[in-house]
Image 1 (cartoon, rainbow, N blue to C red):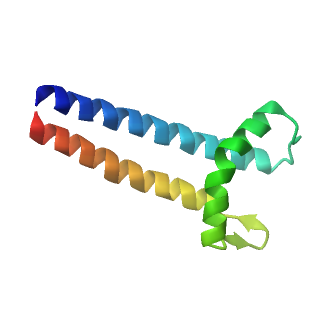
Image 2 (image 1 turned 135 degrees about the vertical axis):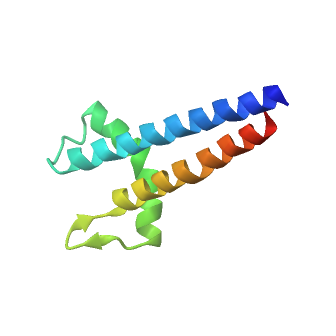
Image 3 (image 1 turned 45 degrees about the vertical axis):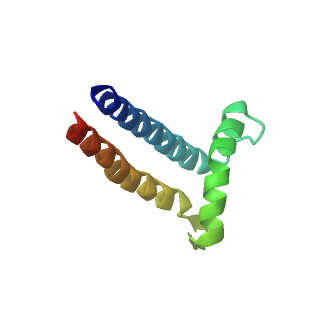
Length: 99
């Protein structure tokens, strides 16, 4: 059980890092969108390709635009914070009980 416990701790750590990285990608994309970036810039293409699928789903489910201000990144960031505080903590608590 020790090996499985350490695996869950490592998994929780990786999940937390991936969610944090994605949250920063969303924040950078939101900031860049304020300055009307060049759509052919490789960095802008990367940011859009990483965030558009998730933001599109949120926009389709929740019409979250107020006066031209798109709040779908905020909704996704709040969901990421929820997942970090829920899934990561559950994995860590389960690992503690096993080991």
